[in-house]
Image 1 (cartoon, helix red, strand yellow):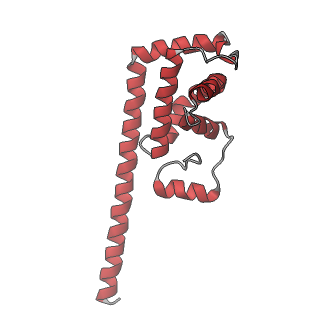
Image 2 (tube, rainbow, N blue to C red):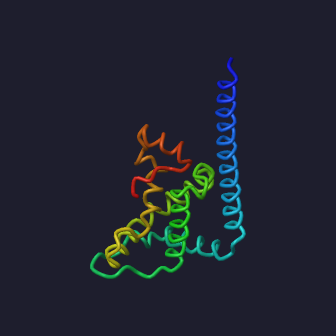
Length: 169
């Protein structure tokens, strides 16, 4: 092998190793950040109180009977929980939080919250004239439910970008 080719191949291999190592560091930092978010949430007493209040609303079927001719009822606990999960969904779409880990920990909670509060979400969207209210949460719940499946090309984009492909963006 000629020395010029050996140097070129060595440079290419060193660059690939550098890129691979960088991707591993990004994944590790993302997972660590996700663990910290999950642990912080479990220690948060305010979150636990809001979750209990929302569970009560859901078990009473309060959110299913929202009259369309009146403004939606005020449920600050539900608003806070929806806003929190909207923040997490946006962080997942941006690649700041590990989707796979978050899905394993919160799939049933996020999907159930979305399904049970959908009438409330739609009523608030109509009342505030904001079609994008809680949209990140909605698209994430639909993805995790299996309603929206990424196409093979979108999966390739997800692998390269190291974050999920958001059809809503």
